[in-house]
Image 1: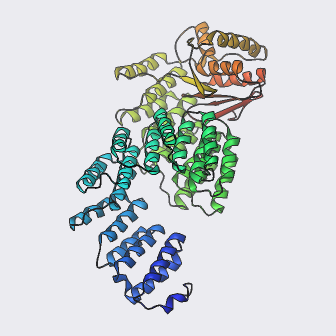
Image 2: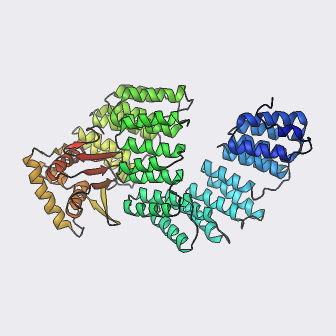
Image 3: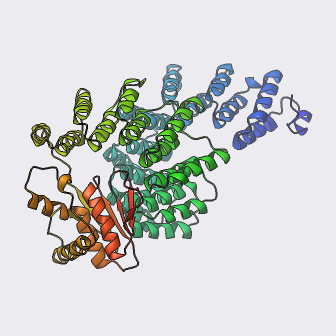
Length: 591
């Protein structure tokens, strides 16, 4: 039975359990399940499971092997359950994504008149973070105060992390400020909390403060700050932080690598994302998913499929995020058959139940390809209730293919769900306007106004020397407005000479032809591109970020701009990247 266990094991008396503990710990570290199972068998036969330390290490071994139910079996077999035994099983459930079980066992522990300690409380707060239940987390917070652990650095750090991940960043900061002692993990948790909530300036200030205090920041700190730079598309600042990572020898971390892949991808530098991916020596699932997402957003669909195959060959098992990235890639490229294939193997081969996001991607794929009835059938047959994102995907497809009747049906279904986002009203309004039904479009917008909301303003921005320049359609507040509008007028003449004709059908308002022509010429992305043409060196690509979907005419116009100027123009809208070069776009006009 114990063929693979060291022969030295048999030479020791049963009462000398130190070697057994060492072997259990070694099996847990190496995740050697087979050897651990053999040890468990010997422990049961020899009666050593009666020793609490052996039982605790068995629970820990199964937890590290991602076998929480076997940990529970070892826990149940333990006759004398110490506080450490309870701590081990509570931690096991938290570490293995079973948060309710973790909290339930905390309740059972306390019912047995055992007080939680500085090892149990962090596991409980981690469970609250997984559940995004700050209300339960506050109860654990109160428990830590009653237990006298509110000043403990590990408990305090776990509370900062929990509040941050639950979106309660003010509470996280309050705990952070009141902690008498903080470590690098505490600072990282606070920086992550700000970054997650989009409070990018606060996150960067925290990082600077940590550096000024000579705190030895870790790879999680760097990862959070690089994520801030990615979300704000601050490429140059991100590169400076990357330089600090290299100096601090954290550039090989898979967490830093994942953030760097996202940074370069979101800033439109896919070759930089590839390089960061290649240079990360140990690739976890997170960095594979980050690279898959990057390729999907940049329309590198074949690379997505190849990466998926390589990831499988490396021994990693894809998760629900992996499949969402692959489905989105297929949707962007109109690969309906391939998308259906990956959707099916996700369920049948990997036993991953699709979420509403997976169904939304599948519906989007079908609807964009004009298969509106098939998309509707998918929604009708979903085993879970369709969400706003699922109906919204159908509505977008209906708008593209001018099926206003089905668009109105989809919108009605969304409104039945209760309060919906302003974007849904705008989508319905645009569907009507695209079909020339301006009166119905006005009614849809009126519904939005009646709720006290308004359409999100379309904005585009570019980064230049660590400064972000933001533009709105038709505005003239920028310090270089005169030069920008002159450049657009000059460029417009050149574009018309080579065949550009403005398509005013994308002006979704009932105005006369001249006004439509003027309106569409000064959309925010065109102002940003003109600024880039004036300011950036001739060999530098112009990278523009837009918060809304680029309109069809601007998409066509930018292709002409790339011809007339000989420049590479990269535009990231709210859905994907478009790389314009030599009159062509990387999306192949399918977006």
